[in-house]
Length: 399
Image (cartoon, rainbow, N blue to C red; front, side, top):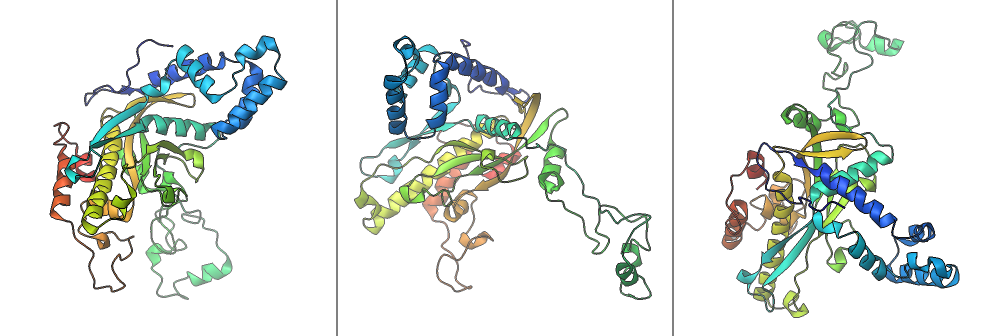
């Protein structure tokens, strides 16, 4: 394994982050880990590695006692704990090179027994590249260049059935615009629908305006990397356990395969007593403000890792090609309350997809921002507590 690995360089605006070096280190790490144990172990471990640690320990220990001879037991661990210890001792700690950590101060909320909490997460660039390679390995096509949908009936020599030809005749349909009629205008724009006069859109990301815009802003020699980030645990099935996963999705593919998403971490839980969460109104309001503050800082930490390479891009290996990619944040999915806070909206009703939170009256407005909450949002936007650095136009728009 290589002795020095740059995990979080302070990149200049015109430099490229060489994520490919991290990929090379990961391949060496996998080879070293593979050589630690026998083929019989990997064959057994490959069938149970998705189970809980207790189930894996029972299977490995039973198999080692019953089926493995004494000469091969050294290369056949009996528990997950032994695997971790051997990996750290012989192969190193590779996850530490792609994992980041920040401290979130909660002193201003005056919660009992809580001063600060830690937020650990995987570099979103690494999670995006791993998810993209998993999709390519499954045979999916990655789209970097925009395409335009053309109508098959537009142009000279249009073939139409007799009914459609009669309907589009100017004698039978005087309201039909002759310039929009492919029967009368063989030089019509092939990118427009001949019957409605509107632009054609295809069922794919390559035909959309997002990829077209990203490609127009990408420097020559680079490729647009479309990012989607989810901070909402509503559809994850674990929201009742206060576990909210943070996922990065690769939006250069068509489809909804789960391999398209990569897990970067979990929103940390504020360790307070249950009486604080269900106490009086004032104490609960401080807890609710602290919880909102934690999510805002988590969103900012993830976006900072993407913004730092936004201008120079990052070099990565996708499949068998070496590409210089430039990230574009296409979708950020958060809960309605957090969306209102993070993007500085006046109320919940400012978002067109949100339902009315207070009553059923269409004339009743949502609760506006409080003064302290607005001030805290501005502190996050200008990074007063951590650092001062110029903001890019895209970052200012997101904040």
